[in-house]
Image (cartoon, rainbow, N blue to C red; front, side):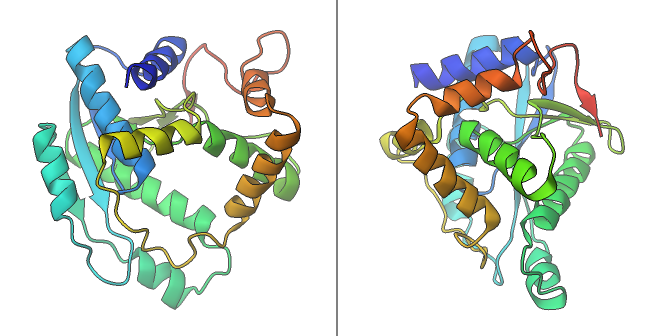
Amino acid sequence: MKTTLGRIRRADQDYRLIDPGDRIAVGLSGGKDSLLLTYGLSMYRRIRKDFTLQAIMLTMGKEAPDTSAIEAFCKAEDIPLTVRYTDLYQILFQLRNDRSPCPLCAKMRRAMLCDISKELSCNKLALAHHREDVLETLLMSLIFEGRFHTFHPKTYMSRTNITVIRPMVYMPEKDVIHMQKKLSLPVQRNACPANGNTKRQEMKELLKDLAKRYPHLQETMLSALKNDDQYSLWEKDGPRKQ
């Protein structure tokens, strides 16, 4: 856990993710990434002692999930949990029947999380994107959109006055998997019908193939995003507005 906390602290220090007095909502899907982020921020809170946490869980599947394990996890970490049941499944897979629902789903979920964060008097929303998420998004943007773009570690959402932070951007996915098993985090089954059959999954496999040939590829690509000597997607002079 020391390494995980070190990476969260590094991201915090590099991009001023957390300020004293922050009320941080954590998007808790029940997957390995969001569970580790929630646990990591809970541990980090014990070190800094100057911010509070609130977990938010949005349902996704056709049927309401059993959230008892997530509720017990949050109770053990002394983190209030708000569960909201959504109609995302009906919108994406019944009304629209979109062949590529991920971009719209991500946008809708983020908007819902920001709205609920504001409702709960939180000023920041923490999302559990890790290093590979950053790089897969970069590849998707380059290949399918013809632009050099990925999400920022810190983004201000002007509509809701919520700042979205991503404290795990330096965390390799393999380490997330390792920590989830080591901590026995209560991962829930992904209820999304598109899981494992998306453009993002294709980028995940492409990145893995490239990394086999170039072992330091992920760190090199990540460094390029914040290289101050050339055009940088990850400026350190303040959050971007959306």
